[in-house]
Length: 179
Image 1 (tube, rainbow, N blue to C red):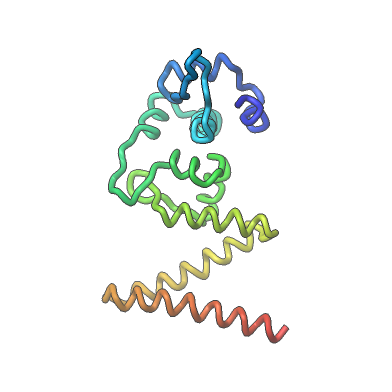
Image 2: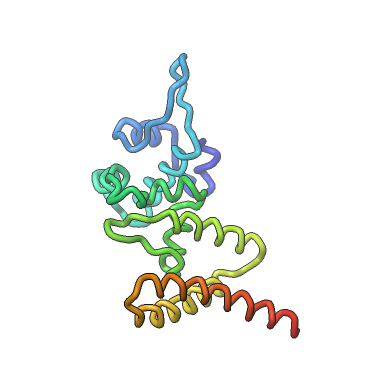
């Protein structure tokens, strides 16, 4: 577990992890003989805590409140859960938020669409797409949002959203055929 954290947090120690556990910020499972077993989610939770301390200078009380906040609704998830489900670090998520590629909702909550967006971003960047290009996708989406907001009927907006996606795909294909 330390080997996973040290590249991003070179000063992390076993003592620090035990302290964070004693403070209730991480709750690893225990084996029958008492050894700690850190899951992927535990490691991501530690990344979140350590990043919040290092990058935002948040006190442990505030970090605990963020981690322990209850869902606003059944469709929303915490920052911690988003990180755990996508494999992004807190630092990477913060950068994507600054780029406008992911946006939290009320109370800093995220949706399952954000999980899908982050997984899509991971795949795209793995294929060589740069963050600058992703920001242009964000800008195009923002333009569509402005247009769609001019329609008041929810069903029309839903239908137009699908039509925009379909037209976009067709235009990209046509452009690729011509080049």
